[in-house]
Amino acid sequence: MEADGTHLGPLELVSGRWAVGDATRPDTHWVELRPDGFHQREPDSEGRLVPWSRIMTGIRLTWGKHSWNTDRRGMYTLKGTVAGRDGGWMHMTLRHPYEDHQLRFDQHARPYRAVDALRLESLLRQLVDEGKPHLLGDPEWVGRAVACLTGGKNSRLTQRALRRAATEAVATAGPGNR
Image (cartoon, rainbow, N blue to C red):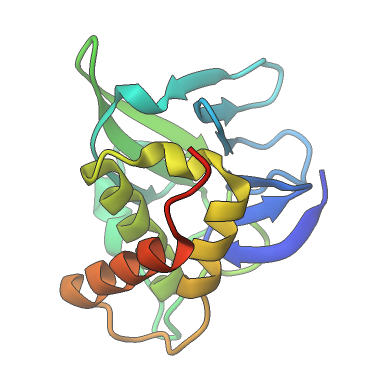
């Protein structure tokens, strides 16, 4: 797969599909955003699907080699980038049956700006909270939301500012095709 150059933290457009993590290198873990849900891609496996309907509560991103490294959630450098290169995890709670679930992704060679990673997390949470995670399966919709969230200063990282940015992105991206 080849990167198209558009990204928001670990979320990147690759060959017309959105993925969290580096989908361009062989033998990596990454999460593809599909019309039917998150699809965990991993070496030597067909992967596994988490349907949108199973995602119950907000998603959070953590950084580190292991999924239990929740203390790595807020580790950023003085330059405003994500600290560490060990990869990341998307944590969520699923229903039917209820369970905590993690999806692994390997980081890109490029550093992630803290503001971009936090804006991505805020967007994911808002869509889940509003019952609209299926919008993530529409590549055009995600592209419009990402365009609204990228750029700007690597500051204003309050929860209020992040929620406002996500709300504006959802409104700007429109209702989607579903």
